[in-house]
Length: 161
Image (cartoon, rainbow, N blue to C red; front, side, top):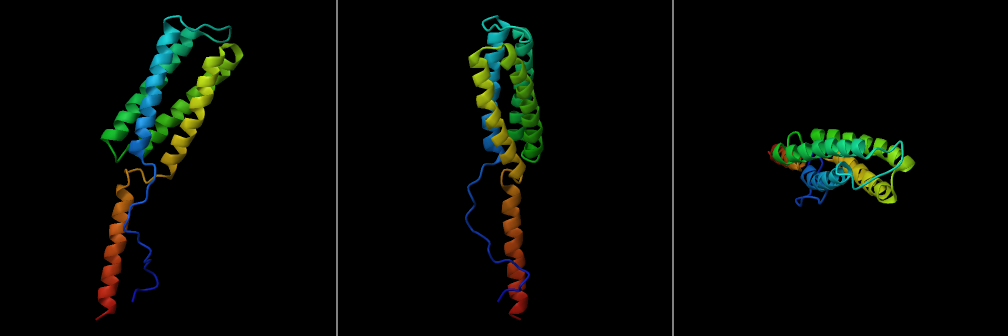
């Protein structure tokens, strides 16, 4: 018999969810695409009309890509900081992409606009997944399950005496 205040719905199987390490890989891919886009802008392959400036776009993409790269590496190496770092890097990239989209729609080319419109929703999904995650690659939820199971065993032992 279990005490009414102890939940007995502990699932022995871990749930499949998107965790910060998975998001880190997505951010790493986006950082790579930003590196390519930055290079194309900085070498003069991509042009536009004012207010679009290819050199400014290339620099901005390099900065955003670097933030995402450092964020992704930190998320992989420091699970205790993964959620916080991921949210910060993703937020920075999202704002940067919005600014970039505002310039690109007024003077850029269709591929630039399409790139921004494709990556923006991916950043939103990454941010949402990180915001909903435990932030420790599932470690917190596993610890919580262990704590609940221990509490339930203790309660059962006391109630059987």
